[in-house]
Length: 374
Image (cartoon, rainbow, N blue to C red):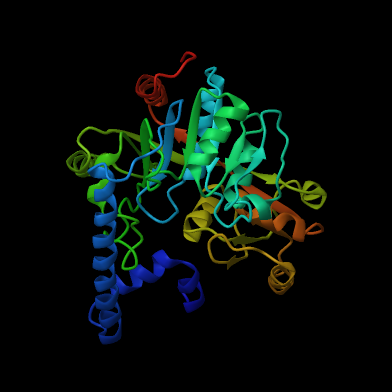
């Protein structure tokens, strides 16, 4: 993996530190980051103690709140999981509103409604942020609200839409709002990454804090052996003995033609793969699993805001590699699609499939005391 990729893939850069312990420079960097990690973890413990001892109070919304979160910085599949859970609850007769911070969106500070219960998209991607727009498009009859202060978003959702439950996207570290159910996703291929907190690793908090989880979902578990699952179950049971464990997989379905040029091709032919996500390698592996052979790759930093020069760079690389189409993620397309109106752009669709889903939703209904039926 080249230096450019390392700069855009923090997980790969941190693995490089672990893989070269005898290099003097790398070991020095590792020690420095380790010291910063200790400061970060100590500060987090002090912050959390204010919650533990009741010094800082949480807002309890007038309806149940279910959070979908993780321990690490991106890459576990929170957005596909949130979509799958919201759809399933809706099909069971539960009125849902999704609340997101709106990372990278201009509306995050003041708050805003991305979409309503009629399927109207009310904000642009620039205003909402990429992930909330993906949620809004995928959930056309479920309102999506963004705002840095998710307490205000929760009260706004209850007032405007009268839902039965609030689904909090990426909420495990949002201490200010009480959750009735905390769902935590762990990537089955790297459940705790390298075991270190920021900035030495990608954990937002020490893995011992998994004890707060009510439900743990292991994502990308399709290739895990029974022995690996048994080992992982044991570790999670030690960390979170009261949490139930479920397994899921990201199933690559088909590439969706996003514009007229792509519809003419019907399928991606000699595609260039483009993404700006936390773990780009997972996208490329998904493409391979779906039988899509890319002629090249371009990786941008996570949550990258594409502009015209970036589109020109992509087109230039297409010409250089004789690529005839582009393939990207849903998250990237909501920002990139308008910049490439004439290029055949395909979006790789992903289904989040949960094993023993009936048991999971039965537990959600019981813990959150939801209306409707399974």
